[in-house]
Image 1 (spheres, rainbow, N blue to C red):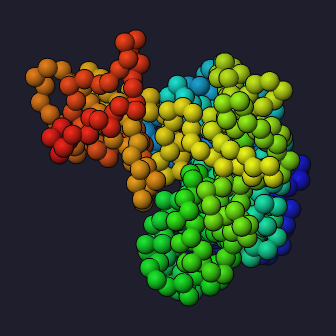
Image 2 (image 1 turned 120 degrees about the vertical axis):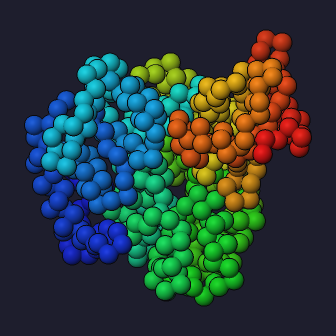
Image 3 (image 1 turned 45 degrees about the vertical axis):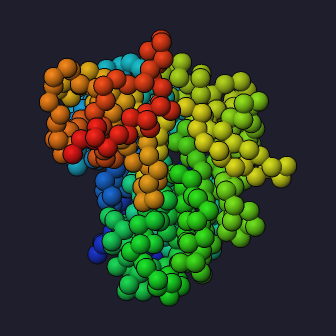
Length: 459
């Protein structure tokens, strides 16, 4: 990935395939250059792009990125309140319509973004507020180089991608490396489309997803490994890939190398990678550091990472940045790990309250705030429960005003969908008399399991 262009190939090889629409690398270069020319008189501030799975989003992203226009990527499924919450923390920002005219502007000047900011992606911090992660071109290009080497992109014929493009795994971890390597990428809307390609014998090269994606795909696939003979790379990240799922993927994709990876948006995002070629793959090991990253463990066992991929900081949250990136540039991941003498890292779990649903790290505090806003609710808590398909599902515990009626589960879920994205809405709800708290009011999450009484479950 050069300092001038996000991709250098400019021939008639397909770059992007979206259904019946195909865009070659040459056509992609022409479109990006045309868009860049229209950005000469752009407004100051951060540009906001909605990450639709479309040629329009990708060409705009590349044009803004190459032109040096700092941009913030928004998920298209965010609710109005989620969009406003993120807009309000960006300072001077704007959106453009199809003709590159300003359709919305913030009118704010604070907080200022870092002068080297290229891309802002969002994650949830431990306080529950969405964090705006500022990444530089240096961060992103170091990540692309690391991914190209660790996933052996030189041997990839093509890529099929169904990850959201607002997600660092999909955008920075898979799409940009493929473009940099000159590898054609097919973008799909869901796993059903992927299964159709398998059935038709048209799935080749690399596929990637979080463990819940792979679990669903294996269920769709059934006992038909012959359909997967042309798949050469299967990449998993976003959550731990347990030993059983590693074994099942190796059986289902016998012609493939399977990769388990670990990363964080704050690290642009790839940190660790382990291939099924390595003997330790059939264990709980997570991987070796990628690229030029170095890792260490604190005396408490927390994994810390240093290198060119460490973010510039959280926009508008200097204290949170100082808490995350500390002495001599070491980023504290919040994950507890073990490290072998050979440098192989095994993650053991988190040292805070963050949850992972479908590979995305979520804070319970944002969800609990929405739960407390429900009619009649005086207190609320949420916890994660292991699930074979999703890795984890959310369970809500609600304390109501005395005498308040118990609502139906479907009513609660419908009310929450107006304020939370679908994957943040709890699956199950329990009515409790009192949440377990310490004498100073701190929630004891470890005791929530004792509240799972069948008679308290809301139907």
